[in-house]
Image (cartoon, rainbow, N blue to C red; front, side, top):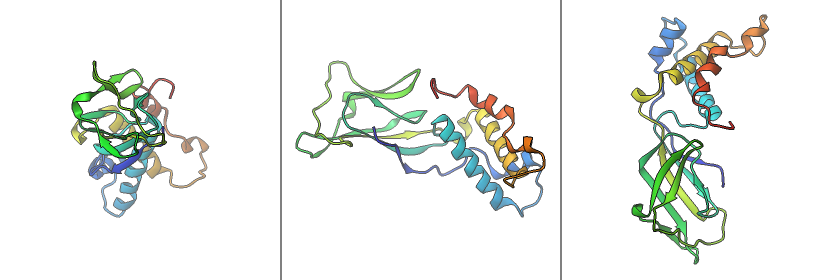
Length: 189
Protein backbone atom coordinates (compact mmCIF):
# COMPACT_ATOMS: atom_id res chain seq x y z
CA UNK A 1 0.00 0.00 0.00
CA UNK A 2 1.37 3.38 -0.98
CA UNK A 3 0.99 6.54 1.10
CA UNK A 4 -2.45 8.18 0.86
CA UNK A 5 -2.72 11.33 -1.26
CA UNK A 6 -5.05 14.20 -0.37
CA UNK A 7 -6.62 15.31 -3.65
CA UNK A 8 -8.76 18.14 -2.27
CA UNK A 9 -8.12 20.04 0.95
CA UNK A 10 -10.95 21.07 3.28
CA UNK A 11 -12.59 24.41 2.57
CA UNK A 12 -13.09 25.22 6.28
CA UNK A 13 -11.38 24.68 9.60
CA UNK A 14 -12.87 22.74 12.54
CA UNK A 15 -12.72 25.83 14.76
CA UNK A 16 -13.20 29.40 13.66
CA UNK A 17 -10.91 32.33 14.29
CA UNK A 18 -13.60 33.82 16.56
CA UNK A 19 -13.72 30.63 18.65
CA UNK A 20 -9.93 30.69 18.99
CA UNK A 21 -9.86 34.36 19.93
CA UNK A 22 -12.50 33.73 22.60
CA UNK A 23 -10.55 30.74 23.92
CA UNK A 24 -7.25 32.66 23.98
CA UNK A 25 -8.92 35.82 25.31
CA UNK A 26 -7.67 37.89 22.36
CA UNK A 27 -9.78 40.98 21.65
CA UNK A 28 -7.67 42.59 18.92
CA UNK A 29 -6.96 41.73 15.27
CA UNK A 30 -3.16 42.09 15.16
CA UNK A 31 -2.55 38.35 15.72
CA UNK A 32 -5.26 37.01 13.39
CA UNK A 33 -2.81 35.69 10.77
CA UNK A 34 -0.73 34.02 13.49
CA UNK A 35 -3.81 32.44 15.08
CA UNK A 36 -5.03 31.16 11.71
CA UNK A 37 -1.63 29.55 11.14
CA UNK A 38 -1.87 27.92 14.57
CA UNK A 39 -5.37 26.61 13.73
CA UNK A 40 -3.92 24.98 10.60
CA UNK A 41 -0.95 23.54 12.51
CA UNK A 42 -3.07 22.20 15.38
CA UNK A 43 -5.57 20.65 12.97
CA UNK A 44 -2.82 19.03 10.87
CA UNK A 45 -1.19 17.65 14.03
CA UNK A 46 -4.45 16.19 15.32
CA UNK A 47 -5.22 14.60 11.93
CA UNK A 48 -1.74 13.07 11.75
CA UNK A 49 -1.73 11.75 15.32
CA UNK A 50 -5.19 10.16 14.96
CA UNK A 51 -4.87 9.34 11.25
CA UNK A 52 -8.25 10.92 10.57
CA UNK A 53 -9.79 13.64 8.45
CA UNK A 54 -11.61 16.15 10.64
CA UNK A 55 -13.32 18.31 7.98
CA UNK A 56 -14.63 17.02 4.63
CA UNK A 57 -11.75 16.46 2.17
CA UNK A 58 -10.95 14.15 -0.74
CA UNK A 59 -8.31 11.39 -0.72
CA UNK A 60 -6.91 8.65 -2.94
CA UNK A 61 -5.33 5.44 -1.72
CA UNK A 62 -3.44 3.17 -4.12
CA UNK A 63 -2.94 -0.57 -3.61
CA UNK A 64 -0.97 -3.27 -5.41
CA UNK A 65 -3.95 -5.65 -5.48
CA UNK A 66 -7.51 -6.14 -4.27
CA UNK A 67 -6.38 -8.25 -1.28
CA UNK A 68 -7.20 -5.64 1.42
CA UNK A 69 -8.59 -2.20 0.62
CA UNK A 70 -8.23 -0.64 4.07
CA UNK A 71 -8.71 3.14 3.91
CA UNK A 72 -6.29 5.18 6.02
CA UNK A 73 -8.60 8.05 7.01
CA UNK A 74 -11.71 8.05 9.11
CA UNK A 75 -14.65 8.76 8.88
CA UNK A 76 -15.27 7.90 5.23
CA UNK A 77 -18.45 8.97 3.46
CA UNK A 78 -20.13 6.33 1.33
CA UNK A 79 -20.98 8.90 -1.34
CA UNK A 80 -17.98 9.66 -3.51
CA UNK A 81 -16.38 6.22 -3.14
CA UNK A 82 -14.81 5.22 -6.48
CA UNK A 83 -12.72 2.11 -7.14
CA UNK A 84 -10.52 2.12 -10.22
CA UNK A 85 -7.97 -0.46 -11.32
CA UNK A 86 -5.58 -1.49 -14.07
CA UNK A 87 -6.76 -4.63 -15.84
CA UNK A 88 -4.38 -7.39 -16.91
CA UNK A 89 -3.56 -5.38 -20.06
CA UNK A 90 -2.69 -2.32 -17.89
CA UNK A 91 -5.74 -0.40 -19.12
CA UNK A 92 -7.60 1.83 -16.63
CA UNK A 93 -11.02 0.52 -15.56
CA UNK A 94 -13.67 1.68 -13.09
CA UNK A 95 -15.62 -0.85 -11.05
CA UNK A 96 -19.39 -0.38 -10.95
CA UNK A 97 -20.50 0.84 -7.53
CA UNK A 98 -22.83 -2.16 -7.20
CA UNK A 99 -19.87 -4.57 -6.99
CA UNK A 100 -18.39 -3.26 -3.72
CA UNK A 101 -19.36 -1.56 -0.48
CA UNK A 102 -17.85 0.43 2.36
CA UNK A 103 -17.56 -1.36 5.69
CA UNK A 104 -16.14 -0.27 9.05
CA UNK A 105 -14.66 -2.47 11.75
CA UNK A 106 -12.59 -1.78 14.87
CA UNK A 107 -9.57 -0.89 12.68
CA UNK A 108 -11.50 1.58 10.56
CA UNK A 109 -13.07 1.74 7.09
CA UNK A 110 -12.38 -0.63 4.21
CA UNK A 111 -13.83 -1.53 0.82
CA UNK A 112 -15.20 -5.06 0.44
CA UNK A 113 -16.53 -6.94 -2.55
CA UNK A 114 -20.29 -7.51 -2.51
CA UNK A 115 -21.39 -11.08 -1.72
CA UNK A 116 -21.46 -13.18 -4.89
CA UNK A 117 -19.02 -10.84 -6.67
CA UNK A 118 -15.30 -11.29 -7.28
CA UNK A 119 -12.54 -8.76 -7.62
CA UNK A 120 -11.15 -8.60 -11.16
CA UNK A 121 -7.58 -9.60 -12.02
CA UNK A 122 -5.16 -6.67 -12.11
CA UNK A 123 -1.89 -5.76 -13.76
CA UNK A 124 1.24 -6.28 -11.63
CA UNK A 125 2.10 -2.78 -10.37
CA UNK A 126 2.19 -0.98 -7.01
CA UNK A 127 -0.77 1.22 -7.90
CA UNK A 128 -2.93 -1.37 -9.67
CA UNK A 129 -5.99 -0.46 -7.58
CA UNK A 130 -6.96 3.10 -6.69
CA UNK A 131 -9.72 4.05 -4.25
CA UNK A 132 -10.91 7.66 -4.26
CA UNK A 133 -12.96 8.66 -1.24
CA UNK A 134 -14.29 11.57 0.79
CA UNK A 135 -13.33 11.61 4.45
CA UNK A 136 -14.24 13.91 7.33
CA UNK A 137 -17.42 15.65 8.37
CA UNK A 138 -19.09 19.04 8.19
CA UNK A 139 -17.91 21.63 10.72
CA UNK A 140 -21.11 21.35 12.76
CA UNK A 141 -20.60 17.57 13.08
CA UNK A 142 -17.03 17.66 14.44
CA UNK A 143 -17.06 16.06 17.90
CA UNK A 144 -16.75 18.67 20.68
CA UNK A 145 -13.75 16.82 22.17
CA UNK A 146 -11.77 17.27 18.92
CA UNK A 147 -12.69 20.96 18.77
CA UNK A 148 -11.62 21.35 22.40
CA UNK A 149 -8.30 19.60 21.67
CA UNK A 150 -7.62 21.95 18.77
CA UNK A 151 -8.45 24.97 20.94
CA UNK A 152 -6.10 23.70 23.68
CA UNK A 153 -3.32 23.17 21.14
CA UNK A 154 -3.79 26.61 19.55
CA UNK A 155 -3.85 28.23 23.00
CA UNK A 156 -0.64 26.42 23.90
CA UNK A 157 1.08 27.50 20.67
CA UNK A 158 -0.08 31.08 21.18
CA UNK A 159 1.20 31.22 24.77
CA UNK A 160 4.49 29.41 24.04
CA UNK A 161 5.87 30.86 20.82
CA UNK A 162 9.51 30.24 21.61
CA UNK A 163 11.41 26.94 21.47
CA UNK A 164 12.78 27.49 24.97
CA UNK A 165 11.01 29.05 27.93
CA UNK A 166 11.98 29.76 31.53
CA UNK A 167 9.33 27.31 32.73
CA UNK A 168 10.24 24.05 30.93
CA UNK A 169 6.89 22.47 31.88
CA UNK A 170 5.09 24.88 29.55
CA UNK A 171 6.83 23.37 26.50
CA UNK A 172 4.49 20.38 26.58
CA UNK A 173 0.85 20.23 25.61
CA UNK A 174 -1.42 19.99 28.66
CA UNK A 175 -2.54 16.53 29.79
CA UNK A 176 -6.12 17.47 28.86
CA UNK A 177 -5.14 17.39 25.18
CA UNK A 178 -4.16 13.71 25.29
CA UNK A 179 -7.26 12.91 27.33
CA UNK A 180 -9.49 14.49 24.69
CA UNK A 181 -7.79 12.51 21.90
CA UNK A 182 -7.78 9.17 23.71
CA UNK A 183 -11.32 8.16 22.68
CA UNK A 184 -10.50 8.70 19.00
CA UNK A 185 -7.28 6.68 18.84
CA UNK A 186 -7.34 3.54 16.72
CA UNK A 187 -6.11 0.28 18.21
CA UNK A 188 -2.36 0.00 17.84
CA UNK A 189 -1.87 3.74 17.14
